[in-house]
Amino acid sequence: MRLTTRGRYAVTALLDLALQTSQQESAVSLSDIAKRQSISISYLEQLFSKLRKRGLVTSIRGAAGGYNLAKPLNEIDVMSIISAVDESVNAMQCEGRGDCQGGTMCLTHDLWCALSNHIEQYLKNITLAQLLDMENVQSVSERQHTSTKDISTKDINTITLSNSEANPA
Image (cartoon, rainbow, N blue to C red; front, side):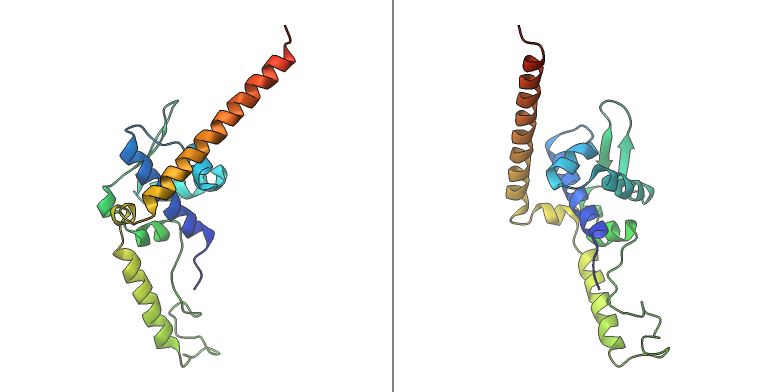
């Protein structure tokens, strides 16, 4: 079993959205999430399209547009997010078909099946609300928010400097 970046990024992006939603009432733009989480905006667009189709987020168009969570935090579990972006936590090579060893079941099939079920149940029992309460989530969020503000200020200063150099008095 390997959880790819698709599943990991989807969970990270929705947790970021949950954090921002709790701090502001307006929709959250994908570009803001992309900056804070260092995820490509085009990749986020693909993920959020799937998340929207599965009813986990809603989108708002326009200048103040962006995304909001479609359900309360305690109703969105991690497994739902992972499934929404077509990921699996299946640890079986045969993906449950029982044809893992030359078309027949291998010796360890039941072990990997039980592990897959255990992981899936664990992720079904963790919601975004619970993730927000985890020890490091708030401090990491504050650090990310501060570092993106620093980048924005540097970018604005660079732009201002460049414009004044381009049009000397």
